[in-house]
Image (tube, rainbow, N blue to C red):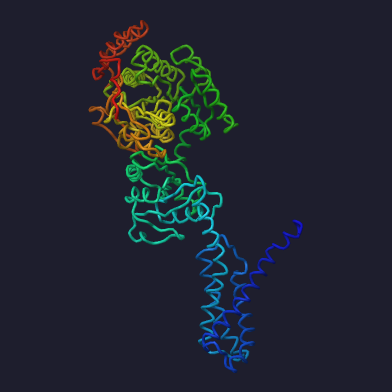
Length: 628
């Protein structure tokens, strides 16, 4: 048989015809079975005489009903509850129709018990005919998966609609490497029941026992928008189990009840943030950005590049990206030009410490909005080179702010940090001074200046998350400075979205982003190890190294005087900070001389004189590592 003949033999019409031929045989067998059952295996003469005409009418009515309900066109792989209901309804309608037509056509009747038995027998046999292939196929695939090499024994967390759809997709996927053992759910009404043939084995708190009992290696989380608290609790339950995790995306809740195994992705640190995700009104951002000339310094960095990406998507008149890192700047601008070919994007390699260069850039491009993200941010490195932190973070900021003022920019937005509050590091002190510098310039400027203060961002170059990932991939150890060290965290797109809203919204001179509750770094490290399927302090050791110079156990986002006047809008707090001292410019000149001389002691002394709340670190060395 050639390919054309094969396709003709398996055409939809022939498949429907084969289905109806089998249905005819099953209906006939059902009527024989019903009659023999009613008469104890021996048909009386009257029943034998009535049988042919009754069978002919019954076949005609039932086959017409099956065609009318579309049951001659059948998908053995995708049939479900709706199709089962249609099958029952078709047979019920056919039984009623048989009685109506029989009386109209004066067809000799079989006893009513025979017709009732035939209805149940036919419904059963037609159901077996249609659903048995799928059930056998699923059973076969399940058995084959359970015996396959490298198969992952899997538990699904969540027996709701998402878990149901995910399980269905996993069970009909031939090439899947996941053998689902069962599900867990906190709903008592679901525990002990079956979902697509798989048992709901118990509540989520039973995970450790179930993982051990069934030798589970993978946990699939099928709960849309699982809260960070429950995610952390789930990880803590499995901390001593060697299991990996995958989760359906939070956007499943908006996908019209459609979820597949292909949508699963690895559990990530973003799922652990102790707050709800932040949503933005794109129309509001578009109104603020559209048609404006925008300049971003530090555009090759984590925050600056995300600012550039987000504003580029809202049709600014032009976008100028400034950075000293020419390689990353080149790659970013190439990406923006490919994504937004009609947007004028300019890449400028420049050092913000060069005032003349900044002035020329401002004169050439006349930006209306200036986002200043360029800064030295690495705390221990800046402790070793405090003069560089001052030159870049303080006087570089002053240069960019003067440029914004000179070119008549409407708004200047400084990206600050929580380390600027009661700073213990040179980096934090330099960013606090940067806040004061722009406030001092704002006094006599038409430009509106604002500082946006927030904590760490997950995934940025300076975040602990990439470091932890590298250490875990290398087999450990994972290094944490102190068991009680905490930090505020936010993912980069959220932080930048709030920066744009806060900076361009004109809410105040100092805006603080509400980042939720702080995260304990040791717990973050343990959770990241658990998420990879490894056991903390068994497969991957956690080592405490001691606080490094300039580091604090915990950060705060507001000082006491700033907390007096705060206002919240969409996770944005607005505060009024104390004005710079009257001799601020004189003290800045002293700090400038100390930075140019390269004397670290003089730099720190000048910082202390400018910032009474600054407490410099006493030691340049870290404590000796102590095993966890």
